Length: 523
Length: 112
Ligand SMILES: Cc1cc2nc3c(=O)[nH]c(=O)nc-3n(C[C@H](O)[C@H](O)[C@H](O)COP(=O)(O)OP(=O)(O)OC[C@H]3O[C@@H](n4cnc5c(N)ncnc54)[C@H](O)[C@@H]3O)c2cc1C
Ligand code: FES
Image 1 (spheres, rainbow over the protein chains, first blue to last red):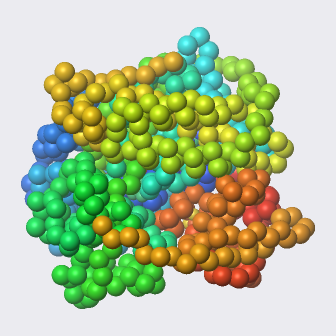
Image 2: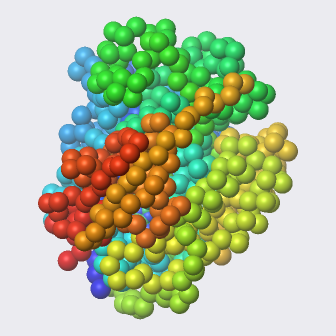
Image 3: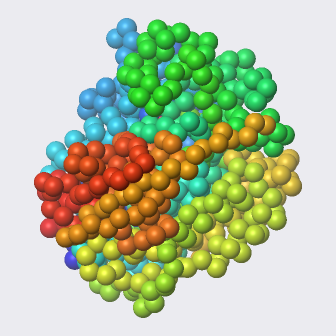
């Protein structure tokens, strides 16, 4: 049995910032992750930019950032959460700067670039394509230096512990040994990240199957806006690249423009070599070209930087050009193929501006929270969201923990006695294909209904793990959660009979004023 | 629309150390695919009990997939499959957990 004032589940930017903030406010903190600390989620994989109104490149104010965020969200942002993101962003980014993250600088100030959907140069970054690793490393170093924070990796939280309707900690499994580990906590923060592993084409890590949503749902919490999965339009498609994040063409387009072309080598978005289309618009544009028979050979679009010389490429991306060469890619000579890829989830746990969910003493932070970005997220907003929400959740959880006694929890973990004979790794692959095909960027009633029917038939049982590392158990665990979360996304998508932002229904292509509202799910 | 270029089907024989012995799997692949792709294929198509450790899959960011391939320490996610036999072993200098998985967490981040 483990015990702590504040339990933080997940050690991405949100979880680590939450742990630091809670410790600073006087709590002792247990920070756990199903992977290694600081390595398992989206944060360490991010390569690009962080949107924040620090106004170093040109004058800016968080209210301008907020206006852009609300506009991009297509009427569905939870304005309190969006404000928290934009208003607290500068303080978190500056604190990260003091902690030595190394934001790129130009003439003595933080360099900021212009990303699509922002009205000015607002996005800071760490060169070269090193934003996420730098953010992760900086927070990790901070966490390590904070004696009030105990860190435990390889610990997967399988269920929240609820007593009298309140969260009193969690049940976890130590994966190398299969041991059950109950954790009592006065306040619990879910910083478990997103759900993009649900899709066959994704930029996710193995740990991004939406555990937090499943945990919250089974604990009685409300989820919001689950239908809004953001597809990043120009995810790498071909030729096969190894050792590089498939989102990497985004910073190339920021810095160098680049032309998005169909099979006739013509631009099909009104861009003229500039990187200006919002993500939902570009995703839709590419899929429509493919449907019209004008896609690239692997059913995507061409992206060309052939207007750039080797010298220009090297100046902008230094060592990355060598990594491309090692993959046999010379951008001065060849376009590459890109296509939409599941990248981020706007929906998630419903939380107030104090980050508390609808279950008392259960908080959420980071991508796991729904609402700040409405129906469509601006680029660069996700890391800011993770930092600001993490900090707020940590502070509020610590304030709560200071007032209440340590709860007792029932140590039994309630596994099913039935171990099904399926190959769960294969079932996960099947679920991912199904989601990509029917619950992806283009949706119809028929496809969604078919997906829902198949998802419901998938295995949702979780037996106890066998002693020692039990990889099949891990897959059964993931399948159970992914299946539940997939059902939420599909049902919400089926119910929303309009198109808005990242949710595009081919049978309801118009945006409807009557639908300018949220859907919530609870069991 | 153009048709996808023809990819010749290649095949690798992954000889994997599982405890005291080796087990071999025949893995079909396309040019450019990685050892990690091959191992994930084995888990989904042949044997889900095979234990491997990885997280980020494509970004080479998590550094969790280190193992020995033909006697050299490499990342499984950046090492390309090649036709013929490849010998896969867990890291030799770390405590073995199972198959290709070793204890790589820093000591103060383990369950005590
Ligand atoms: C490839 C990629 C590139 C991106 N680039 C950018 C960018 O340039 N700019 C930007 O703003 N955003 C970017 N994003 C989005 C952004 O990185 C994420 O939204 C953000 O990092 C999320 O942070 P987080 O702390 O909420 O979650 P994560 O960093 O995803 O961390 C969640 C953690 O929770 C752990 N966890 C999950 N379930 C459990 C469980 N059951 N038990 C224990 N632990 C659990 C995971 O292992 C993981 O370590 C990118 C995303 C990806 C995937
Ligand atoms: S899987 Fe992350 S570095 Fe290889």
